[in-house]
Length: 68
Image 1 (cartoon, rainbow, N blue to C red):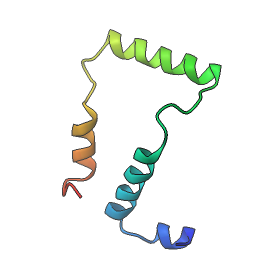
Image 2 (cartoon, helix red, strand yellow):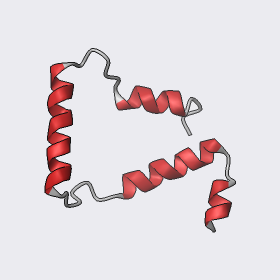
Image 3 (cartoon, helix red, strand yellow):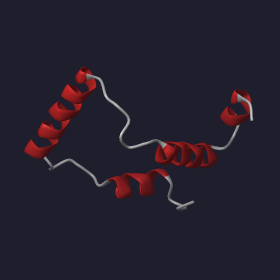
């Protein structure tokens, strides 16, 4: 499939492909020191204020209500 073919897919199919590709990535890919610092900063901020946070499953369900 070409890039243009992929971009012409319906939003639901593109989201499904994004999810499939994301899930296929190795969770232990190396991070640069700057990436690690940023991740640590964001995790600390999240730990400080969980009031506005939504579980990923809820966000995903809102993005893909059909569950496909």
